[in-house]
Length: 57
Image (cartoon, rainbow, N blue to C red):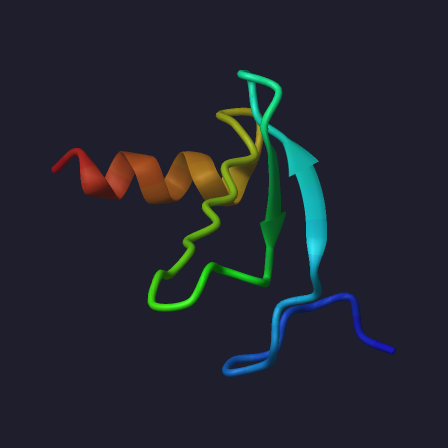
């Protein structure tokens, strides 16, 4: 099984706690709402560093 996400694939349900202690389940948004997950690995990551450098132009 590939560790890479597939386009248009269903996101697996993952329960996480927010900084306020509330539990949010990613992959199961409340009816009529949407969710967005943003991954940022940091400036130590050459891919992120290159992407950020290009966006500052």
